Image 1 (cartoon, one colour):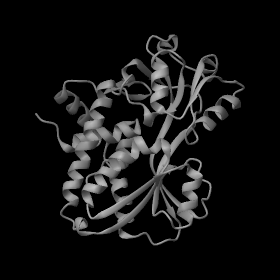
Image 2 (tube, one colour):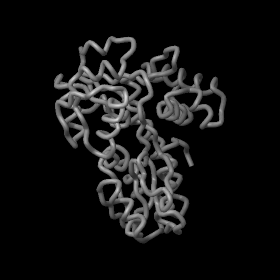
Image 3 (cartoon, helix red, strand yellow):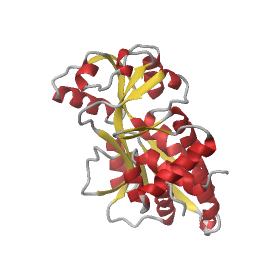
Length: 301
């Protein structure tokens, strides 16, 4: 029996929430319905999408691979529905801002979907740091920004809506002793050479976390490139603490990296939509926000 769109929708919700309970709450359905849909989907695909353990679920390598296809399936179906809503007749411009971390991991799919839904809109996008994007938003030079909002500065002037919350996890090279550890603590990380990503607030968050627990990180390498971090970790140059949204096991070097939870209270990265508070968003920007929301939730509109 072929899998259904509903099963795909439930799978994406669980993958994003990391919990059947939270996914069921967001979908306003019973946990048993979600659990049954996941089992049927795994049976149809012939692979395990999640590892079950007492504390919840962990997405598998096969699960990560299917998640790519699942989000595209839901986006394509939503695009098909949108094509009959009259949005394609719109014309005008949309000015978007994006931070570095978000540009390659959130914006690309969102922008592709928006352009399919609204081909008459001319899109102009700028990548810069969060502080400068806030300045442009307040000044009316940008309609909306897709950015890390965990450290949003001007909350009095700006409206933000969370699209994704991503916890920090530890990246380890295959065969590293910590891969087989039952529990990994921050003290364990402090003894390792650290590959530090320096975009957005990543370096600041990592440093604060280790300093708060009295650990001085041994930084082996600083870089603004996620792919450089991936290669350095994969080849054993060090470990890295990064938000889960940039973990790509199917990417180049990705299958040589293990991602593990760390005990204790780690920061999270919130990615969201930001616009000027009190402003009347143009229709093109409202459509962009709506598409971002539907892509985030995995719901078919």
